[in-house]
Image 1 (cartoon, one colour):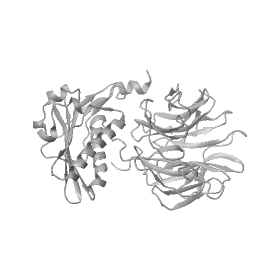
Image 2 (image 1 turned 90 degrees about the vertical axis):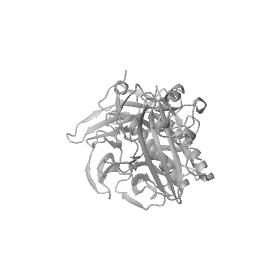
Image 3 (image 1 turned 120 degrees about the horizontal axis):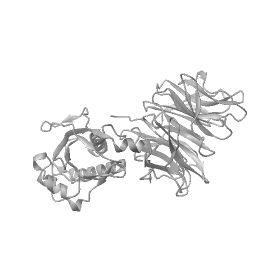
Image 4 (image 1 turned 45 degrees about the vertical axis):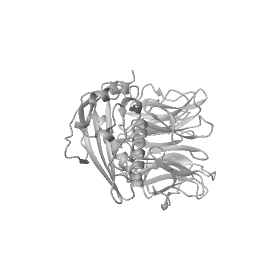
Length: 451
């Protein structure tokens, strides 16, 4: 069994307290939820209609929309399976949503293990939600919370439900999800020119970030998620730029010293970055300041084939994975930055590229070419036998991990043109993330922008 699977199999998940408003009548308990592989044994969750505290049509509409959004969000994680409402034997929106109103035996017969109840109130330009999570088998309330969104209720409904989903994830897994994160990617859209776009974690609301009117590639998020660096041909050759992570943000040139400046990536400190620069005819990786000043060279020339590119750093910042042709074919190497020692990581296949560190730093995902196609693989960061996650679905490339390490986003041309897909960290539940004109490639997941 793969080491990660063994770890998951014996994982004990603890309740964590969040800095959220707790309802006075509910004392949040720390309980242990034991699961095997969460992606193979999805936890069944019942989410009945939310109670509407007023009588307006707007509240009815928002309550229905809230249930659907929560169901979709929890199902997206891969941890949960929604119980068919036809199996429900009572309606908390009519009988009550608090613990004294819940008949646990009735819910147990529906096949659910967890139950979410809630109520929504629209008060002026604000929306208020009271929510409860119940462990049906232990017949316990796991939490009660109140969330308030000031401003347009329709606009604030999604953030409110995502807070609830994150609260459920913390209760279930002991850590935050990725509901405050974004995914940047390259898209040709309708213009045919590659530009940087970004969407929410689930593909919601894709927007164009760069408007360079030139080929723009390889986005990389700053550690705080406020900026993106990328390569663009604005000046008719590949140079590195930084801009704010929002549409219309100012674009700043980082470096134009080399003839080919590509594949920038931030260090975890958020003050420095690395990139592959061609200086004096030698393509190597350099450490740069955010303003583009070269601090030092990180890789040296091995031979005329010694091209080094695609640097990416471990979460602790002590190691750098990169792609090099020093062995004759593109392979992934790891440099220990303190000692300077470099180790070859991949040996399986003749073309391996696009390394991506897992958030825990113990694994690296990459794209490897075998049997005529690129596929996504995961390998222990110390080396060993890789695990192939995609197969027989065209080319699957450029993986990137979600902030919690449970999902991997990647590009695939399995339906003809390239688009953005997501799967869990074991390769199951593969599905398309965005639907846009043109082609979408090179996705990269941001850190969580809100907690």
